[in-house]
Image 1: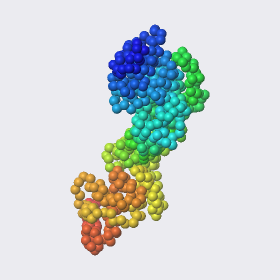
Image 2 (image 1 turned 180 degrees about the vertical axis):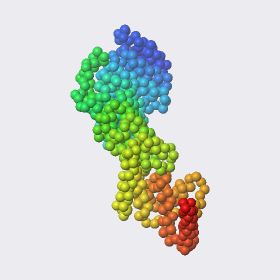
Image 3 (image 1 turned 30 degrees about the horizontal axis):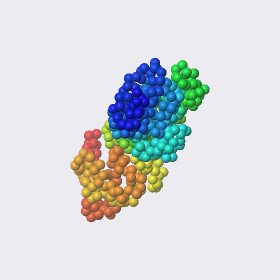
Image 4 (image 1 turned 135 degrees about the vertical axis):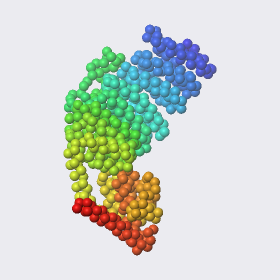
Length: 564
């Protein structure tokens, strides 16, 4: 039948014949173990279509991919290594079908890869994994040129991708690897694959790369999401970590010949121990969060959710982990991430820390004062939900720690301002909301030369509010006045660039700006303002002060009479 079909196709193009041939093979596959030579005929049918698939119609392509998937699932363990090389090699039509615009087609190609990664024959599995590694390395080097090589195999030598193809394939191959990554407690996942999944995703694919975060955030998210999914399936490797149980001799699996055909103890990678995986996870999370200024909000939120899940899973091991530097560094980095300028990230940090303190007694933290500082810092946030979230977090902390941190915070703030009152140097991290950036901005306001950037109408509105308590129109009049007063050409320093971001989040900073700018405007214009000439401006301010003075004296006299 196969020979006849081959002879016909040499002289006449007929897709219906190929489709019928594939359907016959699908029916006969279950009988292959009982019929000698039938498996070779299936391979011949695949060979017959290898060079024709790219010219075939949708229905025939789908039948071809279905045949490959069914063969790998039902008779995969008895197939040859050459068959794996044939369907994944450089001349395989599967490589172009992965980029098909038809959703059903590339989903069917995923089925082929997933079936190959489900094989119980270790040599075949490793061969398929080698082709995936080679593809990953080629695509990853296109996106991150400075990345080191991690696949020694040359099975795809001469293959290259452009930037768009590399991006799509990286996302595609993350979906491919989900088949083994999300298999819980699989001996093959932990021992047969080299490099192991955790090392591949966390180290070799550089998810903490600032270049990847800045230019290909969708790829970074796909890598980290798969890594999180894989680690959560294995409880983040807490029980086997040397951080918990101490360094022990690596576990070597017994012979697996009774379970996996074609394998032997020597075919497993010797460096597959999971004892260092928790350290790798903590290091990766810390590195990604430290790149928060170039990392997308969704990726930061994913890492914060992961960190909270990890802490919850390690509740019984927290006493040991709190003594480990890499763990405390992750907690400190989460706290610092709370100063991020995006509300979604700030809220996620509050949720993450609340989850952490639900299982971690706050008194066991060495750096609890930083958490208190973060909570106090957000007490003046413009967003009510964020203020409420950090107020709830503050309520979870011991009162003695809160009181001590507040005293230290006020003392350090006064000393720092006095020591740096003549220092006009910039130490602002653009987009950061931390207290040092806010204090640097306040010093910048005081020490900078008068720019007179307030428009006349904004000055008039502000002075009417300050002198006569005339409430401007609009619920967000403070933000509106601030916005109309900014000038891009006058933003020469980091403080000038950070001011719009910080003032839009912190009401204390916004009010300080609203109070300081009218004074700066008066100096810059030498008291020639919308209130009139210098004498008129001075008289208006003096008159308002005297009115307030008389009110204060009247209130004081009334209080004295009440006491008498």
